[in-house]
Each structure stands twice: as C-alpha cells, then as structure tokens.
Image (cartoon, rainbow, N blue to C red; front, top):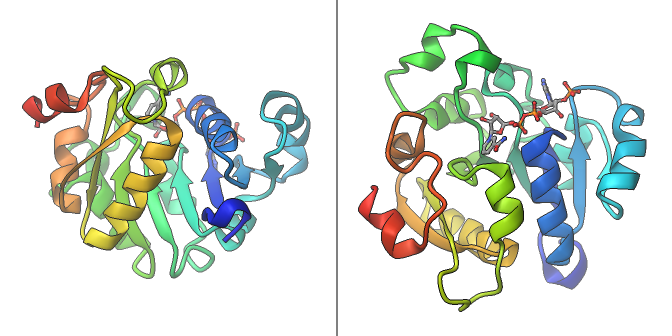
Length: 211
Ligand SMILES: NC(=O)c1ccc[n+]([C@@H]2O[C@H](COP(=O)([O-])OP(=O)(O)OC[C@H]3O[C@@H](n4cnc5c(N)ncnc54)[C@H](OP(=O)(O)O)[C@@H]3O)[C@@H](O)[C@H]2O)c1
C-alpha cells in the first residue's frame, strides 16, 4: 500500500496509454511506478515533465514495487514481461492485438482463447484481469469524471476472481469511469478489436448493450 491506503500502481509501457493512465492515477492520489522497455534513465526526463510525481523505473522494478500492475505495452511484447517479479500481483491487461504494431502474429491474431488468457498462461503466478483496453487514450484523457456525474463513461472489466474484479472496479472508479464487470477472463474476448465494445466511449447502460 502506498499513500491514502491506495494500492501502489506499476505501469509497464510509457507510451500513449501508459502516460494517460499515469496522469489519471496521480490525480486520483495513487503512487505510480512507470516503465518503458529499457532502463529507467531513458524515461526519467519525460516522466518528470509529462507526469510529474510518477517514478520512472524498469519494468521489473515496477512489478516488484507495485501492488497492481497495468500492462500498457504492445501485446506482441508480452513474452518479455518479468514473470518472477509479477508473481503474486494483480495484473491489469490493457493490451490489444494490433497488427500494424504487433505484426502478423498468428497466435495473437486468431488465438483459441482471449488474448488475456494467453497473458495469464504466461504469468501463472499472477492474477490477470482485463480492463482499460477498449477506450482510446484520448477519450480516457478527456472523459474522466467524478462518480455520479450524469453521462459518465464506462470501462469494462473481465476477470476470473470476483475479488480482483472488484479491486479493479475501485481503481477504474478512481480514474474517473463507471466500472462494468462483464464476467471471467474468457469473456474479455468481447472487448478485443473487431467487437462492438472495442473503442467504446459510452456510458454503462450503452456499453452493456454492446456485450
Ligand atoms: N493508444 C490507445 O488509445 C490504447 C487504448 C487502449 C489500449 N491500448 C493498448 O495499450 C498498449 C500500448 O499502446 P500505446 O498506444 O500506448 O503504445 P505506444 O504509445 O507505442 O507505447 C508503447 C510503450 O510500451 C513500451 N514498450 C515496448 N516494448 C516494451 C517491453 N518489452 N517492455 C516494457 N515496455 C515496452 C514502449 O517503450 P519504448 O519506447 O521504450 O519502446 C512504450 O513506452 C497496446 O497493447 C494497445 O493495444 C492502447
């Protein structure tokens, strides 16, 4: 636990999504450890300027120091994740298969399961929940609102353990969105590219009609 009794967050991926989530989390009072693909010094200056208050670290360090780790790196790179450091952690998979970035990867393009189940299989000691994946970063940035604001936008959450989805729902609420828990990790497939919920920037009632 870090400040305000809120879990410390690790964000692996310091790009468009990672930076946007870092900003929202800092605003909500979370401690944030953010990492890119390399050494911490590579992102130290940008972190200081763009997300002051966040701590630039390596991916392994983000995993070790955080209670909840958000995966905001290209899905095609998930096999580089620090498996041991993520052991025992609640891991939020915000990644999508996007061929322009991830290349023509058959295992990711047509997986037998949801892509989050592939990530879960790679991280057997972690508890993976899919969330924060379907809304574009610019909408995440622009649409965050306090709880009970009329028309507040919603974020879908899929996970195998109810307690973990509830924890993620609290985080989603703190970041400025209504959480919608949709079921187990397999149901996260409904949030992947090509499905109606992918890209959704709508309120909870509308989001549920897409699922
Ligand atoms: N953009 C969106 O609106 C959005 C919304 C929802 C979900 N997503 C998902 O979020 C993920 C990131 O998207 P993005 O748009 O933020 O991409 P991006 O702007 O290209 O940023 C990717 C980040 O991941 C880092 N990275 C690359 N390989 C890594 C590795 N092996 N270990 C740790 N970090 C690594 C990159 O660091 P380096 O610069 O050091 O390579 C960079 O900081 C994707 O899976 C995407 O589908 C994106």
